[in-house]
Every structure is written in structure tokens, then in C-alpha cells.
Length: 412
Image (cartoon, rainbow, N blue to C red):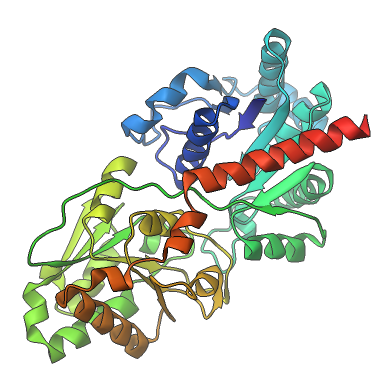
């Protein structure tokens, strides 16, 4: 099978979607699926992830540059041609490049991944041009203006109209649409008004061995938080619970260490300081993905913080890495959501983000188990870990590809 994967933001770009796509493409290649990635060019101002695990993907990644110069008339004509408010010239270059690649060595299937949603626009035109089946994977809400209770409001009215047009068109015309969670699938049916069959393909969890810190109870949060993230996730509830727990058991002040792995958020550090936790909290700043896995591997407990949304529609990629590393997860998540669904498994301990008492009760219970050398009793269940193993996820994805190809063959 030869697959064209359209993932505009792709490793080594230091971005969560790029990392998720990188893991999938590595897994497909390991399975023997000949996969070529079509991506944006790397620009000098983009932060890069220098993990060695991405080195093998360089040779099969084709980077299409955005044409230089304004060329207002040409850009306008291409936007009309491709029915988009932006990226018209990039789309034209991308289609031409894929036609050239296909003539040299034909593809069997087009596989697009977002964000950004322009991946699916490119996939639509390429699949039509080459008469190829198309699988579209949507990892987050379709576009920034659809993120629930987000601080972002990108794009003007025309851009939002065009974006919504492509959402509905993708759901109606792709041979298969996949999501990492059932709730994200249902969310897109609600916002688009398009009921559609879909597959649920979770993220791949990755682990790295790492030594744990003796005589410490280390809590690790990996990823963006506070103003670095669209939904402004806040760890305030966790800090209040920890502060209360230390007040009841002062010995914890010298034992508990909280590590935030990712871009530093001054608001998070200030909250910790105000509650007397400055000496307990460490912020690493941005690190390579493989290094973040080592931090997770060194943890006794992993912290997941979701935004203040009514329904947790996401399957956070950090969550699957926590589980893959066999770490108990303290999840500050909405009462209704994907993480709540998974909290039926051992190893996932959920509380509402602002329910200080519930967070404190869970944290006290986890710490007691660790102190009693019973960490294995609070670790994620084997069945949960199996869901995010590379082999399991790759099986589901390749089976989806095979099903699409078979249906196309039968349709003649």
C-alpha cells in the first residue's frame, strides 16, 4: 500500500499535531506501508523538536513552500479556483507536486490530518485529480473558531464561512473520517449538521525508561498550560488541594515535587507562589518530545488539566503517553467527557477542575499508596494501556485503509 499523508504541520515542528502525525507515520512505515508526507516548508521562525525518533521521516517528507511575493491577482484567482479564503497558491503548488510524485510512483490512497484544516482541502482536490480514495483524520475541533470556550477568535467572517463550507464538504465526500474519540465525532456532527459514519482511531502512546527520584513524590504535567493554550487550562484547583494537604501533613512539603514540562506560564508559577508552593514547583520550559517522555517516566503521578468546558470532547495526546508510561493519572476534567469515560479503568482518577476537596481526596489517596510501596495498585489497567499501543492503533488504521480500498474496488 502506498499512502500520501497530508500533514501540513509535521515534525520536526514542535507542535502537538505534528508530534501525533509523526508517531502515526512512523507506525505506518514500521508496518510496511509506504508513506509519503506532504507538509509546509520549515521556516526559520518555527520552533523545532530535535528528538532523534523523527530522523527516519526526513527522507519521506516532501515540503511544499509557500510562493514568495504578494501576487495579489494570482492569489485571488487561485483562491476562487480552490474555493478557499487562504493558501490558494500553496494548494496549487501542492497539487502540482503530488501529480508529479504520482506519475513517478502511484499512490493508492490519500490520508489527511488536521489541524490545520487546509490539509483536508488539499486532500479533496488531490483525491479528485488522481481519482484516489480519501481518509480524513480530525484530531481537534475543525478550526479555531469552533473550539469550545476558547480564547481564540481567528479569522474574519468570510474565512469562517469558507472553513465551515469545507467542514461539511469533507464530512460528505471523504471515503472515511476518523477521530481520536467518539465525543469529538459527535461534536462535529452537531456543529456541522452532517451525520456521518466515522472510525475512532486513538492516539499512539509512547514511553521511555527513566529513573525515578528517590525519597520524592514527583507529579508531572506535560504540555501547554495557562496562557500558552487555547482553552486557558488552569492548575489552580490542584495547587489549592496540594496546599491544603501540606497544611494537614507538613512532611509533604519536603517530599512532593511538581514538574511542569513545556512552555513556562507565569500565571501558573504565580498561583503556586501565592499558595506557598514556589519551592515545590519546577518549570522546565520547552523540551524535546523524547525528553518530555523521560520526565513522564520519572513521575510517580501524572497530572492532566483540561479546560473549563461543559463536555470533554478531546483525547489529549499527553494522556495516552501517561498511560503508556504506566503512570497513575490525576485528571482535572469535566464531569462529562472522554476522560470521564476512561475513568472507569484503574489508573485514571478524575475530579472536576474546581472541586478542591475531590482533588485533595484523590491526591491524598495516591500519595498514601506510593508511600506504602503500592504504586502497582494505582497504575493504569493493562486493558487501557493496550488501547493506545502502537500495534493496536496501527491495526485499526490500516484496517480502515483496507476497507476504503476494498469498497472502491467493488464500486468499480
